[in-house]
Length: 405
Image 1: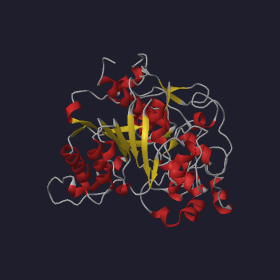
Image 2 (image 1 turned 30 degrees about the vertical axis):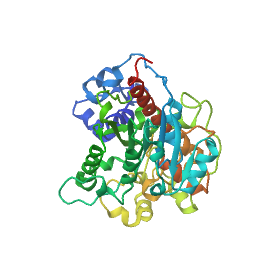
Image 3 (image 1 turned 135 degrees about the vertical axis):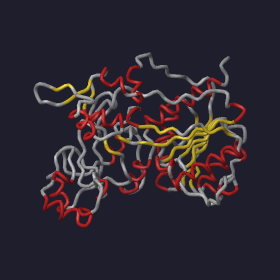
Image 4 (image 1 turned 120 degrees about the horizontal axis):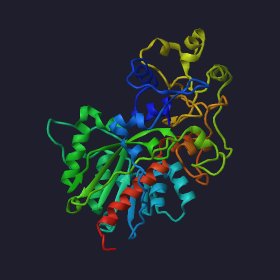
């Protein structure tokens, strides 16, 4: 059975849309006789093609690397992607990150990793040529100059994507994987992605169709979407890359912060930001799962100021999370006015360890730097459990190159 909130997240629509479907008879939930809450049976969801995976009850196969697969990770951040790949059986031989606090985090948790802290433009990757299986990383999205034609490798100079592409050119990995925001699909009216495709083709790689991945389908209690780009070297492109298979269970904030399937114990205590008295007085009036519309009208106007009169739902303002739903996408700070992330039961932002749990970092992964830097590292990270599933997909592909082993 799936709740209204769960199905809305799975389909990528609002709960209000499901309520309209209920009213017009398109999809009517099963009512709970005690509290009238609506739930949907698995069979009711068969009509949605995008939910085909919930009917796949075959045994999940976990691959084991048949060789020592080596990776280089660029724009490594606090290590969310690297931890997931490591867990999948990949060996990271070099990580690059420019943020000093994130570098300190990587070095403190994995002293054996070779972490190069500094500008990627200063790194020569040529010594790794033909010695690397995979290059990964989340390059920031920047527009290229565009003159009405396909841009090539040299025209990408000055962007961080150019540095990512240069690492590919100098090392010639079998496969690369880049993660980015959903907005890359439409950035600069689609020109940025078209230019990226042009550069990848010039480098001798086949870029697969960009894949939008929802973290909540991969044991991550968070409504986070990331765009994943995978490129395969042309001489290996006949081998098929299979995207990770979704999980049928949707995890919630309760799963993140309390002992259960995701974590063996309740979330450890840790430092966290607090609200000033005035803001706390406002947030105390917001119910679990509520936001600014749940406040008295005079409080709304006083708290939101000019934003009150602007268009849009402004659903992140004065937002308190719900125990029984995944978290909204974590940002670089839990108490930003436009993207509030208030604890479900206590009137405060999430603590550092709560933030880390929602990103599925292990409890023993420590973050360096001041509190604001720790939140930023966690908010920018790739969720570890999602990274693990992507890592397993990479291992499956690399294993398929040498099936005799």
